[in-house]
Structure formats: structure tokens, C-alpha cells
Image (cartoon, rainbow, N blue to C red):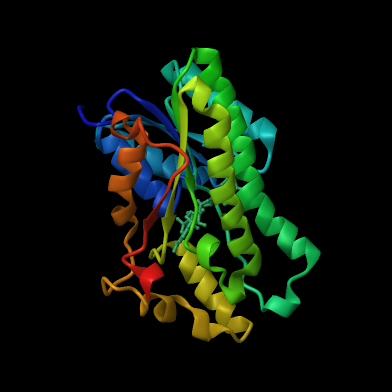
Length: 259
Ligand code: NAD
């Protein structure tokens, strides 16, 4: 298979569902060796079987992005199988909507761990592998427009995604001398299983007015994103086309931020 990422080994965390699964399929379609790293091992394996049936190269690894040991072992498995690592997508994330005054310390910490601490751990461990290989490598983080705007029903999540943006910039500065680039993309509203769960939980806490339909109504291009809308930017950031770009956050939100 040929393509912009042909022969590259790319790890996608949270790769078993939604945006991560679309990226994994998109990378495999363009000839990459894809490592689907997810807490949900069954879903990761089902996806890699699908990719293999379509003639692509993919393996599944069970990883908890908040647990450094599993992150390390996921990278080791990828390198053992495909010989090297070229790009690492810190994409796994979760959200737990809450009224602002109800957010507790433990709520805040739990959301920060999965969305932000995971980016620190994943970037450090991927960078260690890149340095062991010599130089070069790409880290790509999934931020969110929530990290720029701060949504009232999603305060911990918004804070965590702001942290993802800062970590992207800090890591880009720290790793540039090793020719490792670190970038992020910031989706707006993407139709994935995450939103199905969010909509239900927003209703339960009486904040249904902040759900998917209301967010999507503020999109200039007139529709929410499909996970497939994220793939071209993912391919760009995983390929040599983006070699001279680092520390940047690319919005993919249909003009939402302008509204
Ligand atoms: P999703 O729920 O469809 O997929 C998330 C995946 O992450 C799941 O497969 C889940 O098993 C995995 N995961 C969760 N916790 C994990 C952990 N601790 N370790 C390993 N894997 C874990 O969600 P999605 O909508 O595809 O979201 C993907 C990313 O995009 C997230 O970072 C999310 O915050 C971000 N994002 C989503 C939207 C949106 O509108 N859907 C918008 C902006 C940003």
C-alpha cells in the first residue's frame, strides 16, 4: 500500500472508538502500521481484525493512558512488532458533565488524569523511544475547543484540554532539538459515542440545554463533524508534510469558534 504514511508506525490511544478509530482506519488505508492502544481491548481487537481484513496492518494493545507502565509496554509491543515508532497520537479522553458548583476535587482530578496527565505520560514515553531510535518523531494531541472556550457544564474537561494545549507547546519547545515535533488538533462537536453518553448525562443533571444539538447549532458550516472529518488533518500531522510545524493547535470545528 502506498500513501503519505506508508510504512510508518503510528500508535493511536483511544483508537478503538470515535475519532481514534477513524484515524486508525485512515492511517491503515494509507499504508501505515497502526497500533490501536485502548482500555477497551475487545473493541481494539475487533477494529484491528477489520483493518486486517481490508488488507491493512494493525495490532491492538491494552493500554490505560493514566498508567505509565502500560503506556511503556504498549510502545515496546509496537516496536517489537514493527521495528520502530514514528508517531504517537495522545487521543484517549473522557468527559463527565457536572454543574459548575457541584464539581468536587475528585471529579476534577479524575478528568484531569485521563485527558491531561495522559498527554504528559504519553509524550514522555514516546519521546524516550524516539530518542532511543536517534532523532525525529511526531507527537499529536487531541485537544478541544473546550480548552479555548471553557464550557460551564464541562469545567474539569475544559481545564484539562487547556492543559493539553499548554503541554503541546511546552513539549514542542523541549523536544525540538531532537527534531521531535509536537502538535495538536482541536475538534469542535464530533458525532461519536462520547456524545451519546454526554447527552444522556447532561439530561440527568438538568443541563440538557448544553447538549449536542445546541452545540452543533453554533457551527458556521451547518453540521457537526463526522470522525472522518478529522482524518485528513491526522494524516497531515503524521506525515512528513508537517515536518516544519511544531507547537501548533489546528482547530477542526467548522467555524464554531467564530460564532
Ligand atoms: P470515544 O468515547 O468515542 O472514544 C474514546 C476512546 O478512549 C474509547 O475507545 C475509550 O475506551 C478510550 N479510553 C478512555 N479512557 C481511556 C484510558 N484511560 N486509557 C486508554 N483508553 C481510554 O470519544 P471520541 O469522541 O472519539 O474522543 C476522542 C478524543 O477526542 C478525546 O480526547 C476527546 O476529548 C476528544 N474530543 C472529542 C470531541 C467530540 O465532539 N467527540 C470534541 C473535541 C475533542
